[in-house]
Length: 386
Image (cartoon, rainbow, N blue to C red; front, side):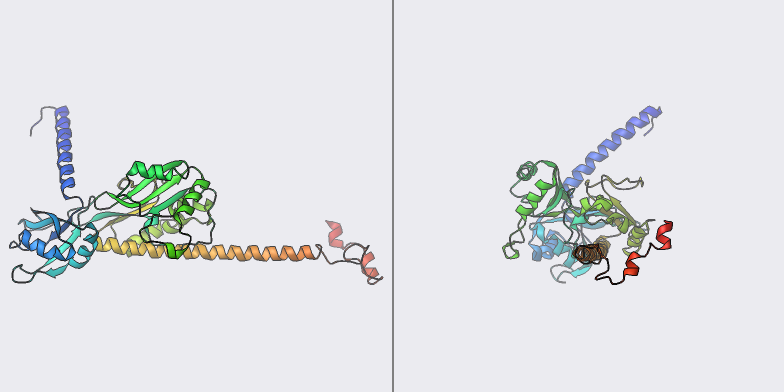
């Protein structure tokens, strides 16, 4: 289009941006929560797709489209399908079993090797995607449990929130039964932006958070049900407390490295395009960084594909395991040092501070006139000079 003035050009640009945003929002609503299947032949219809996804509970919906592959010299469009499963819990199994796998029976359904991945809210046409993991979502097999929570620990990471029965307001009211809640953050899915059943609850006081922890902790492991609502002290909160946490250890500095070498090593080992450590209280200097997914500490990366994203999470968990092992080692050294100091103090107290003398005489005085010369000797020259 031709504009007469710069003001008209700016107005047209704004209108086009607004319309494109509406189109993308409508598109996102339609395909959000879908799996994307690519690589199947033109002979496939919905019948072929139903055949492929039957072992995973069947299809709830399917939409067939065409696209021109990114960075392809061939402008010929290829087919892809957005599919939603009846059983959403089977999505991971479907991706694991179908991605880069030969499917079809060669008779009714032409066989081929397909690509099956999640549709990403923050993905690119080349298959790259943004992935984000809150630190408490990582497996923490070596978390130092011997460290007692400090008075500044006020945040709890909760899992298995009963979202099928309670909305956000009802959850807020439930946790307010333990005390004043400053913040409730529900973690959302990377694929659909819907709540996952995990979240953070920050109380105004440590005492209220402690009451909540106690209520969510079963009295014995035998009573625990895998689907029960559970809670644990927030590792994000402790990381953001730096050396003021109950570990007396700066997790962020250990992860990032003094000169960023830690992040660079993670980026290289996981073959990532970019990586960021993010939280509301952390200053982010990189203007290309993605938006925050919450005030708590989370690690965001741009990965080439889902396989690299999965490997990145596993690498993060191993890294956190090493950091926790180092923290546990330091806690043990402090404990031994404190025990040695206490034992020395107890021994000194038992001896009256110095060697005991005879009754009625100063401690260290000669007994029965023995060593009189030593007792009556003047102070040493060094002592006198002081």
